[in-house]
Image 1 (cartoon, helix red, strand yellow):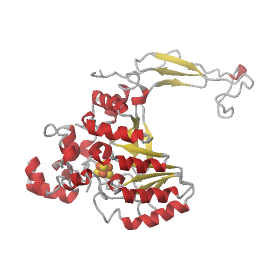
Image 2 (cartoon, helix red, strand yellow):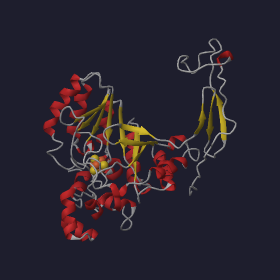
Image 3 (cartoon, helix red, strand yellow):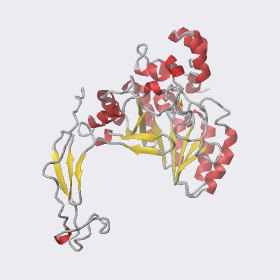
Image 4 (tube, helix red, strand yellow):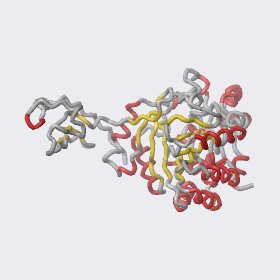
Length: 390
Ligand code: SF4
């Protein structure tokens, strides 16, 4: 048994352990175990500094989960968009392929807790029909392995899946969604890296939520993946008490870049049964982006998105930097609230043609210029910036 597998075996997971270690009332611990089992491996457990800290909140079951049953079990409608078991096909050219129900840690905010940890719901039996679906659907050029956590599979099993996918020439890109570099970095071994790098182009998206998760172990794991030529991106979920402050997110993003992980997405928390106590306001997220843009490298700024309830997919949201826009110009503000104008491009050979579409742009003046003027006074409501702590 490898070290990471022993750590899974030695995880906190029973009701007795929850009562002993975290002083959870026994009745609540039993109800929580029934609702969504715990798995806290010794490595992640060692990152907790005090009860209720950002690491604790992510992994220790909380009674609040039991008081929150209003939200949907499957807020992203993944099951409704599943043509065969283990596959969700929402976007035209890419598909989500669930390959295991197991994870190195069971996150209390998990959107997929209806399936995670349950061998029946994400079953190995579904793999064959999933492969058949991917073989037949030649429009799919990008497959995202997920679960559960694909890196919970043994090296042998994972390689069989990768080999099978690489027999499908239309699949150009393989992505693996894995929280292991963050929650159980010992899983990233030399042997695993030597397997993964045979199946390029292969990308990994991992999931760090707080700067305390960047440790010597997780740094080494991410650097090993990068050294194997694997671009590693990070998907952070915005959560109350965990990372809902601009300084925390800025520190996390900067530290991720230092370990060669590119911030990719920052999500608003999904409306998930048992996890609504993690949700923050949209303004909290916008304020965080406002305090990143211009204040640190653009590389450190993730796309801020809402994964739309009902299966609408990821939709980006931005602070409002556009103060006015008409066919002649756009008026913008920068991160310091200074206002700038940018003239629209006009094709001199075809004055009527602006922005590449003459038909859609109304033109009622000489040389194709609109008589409509930008109002002398634009009603500009500039946001108040919250100070970022350094
Ligand atoms: S690792 Fe991912 S799938 Fe597993 S419990 Fe955490 S969020 Fe859910």
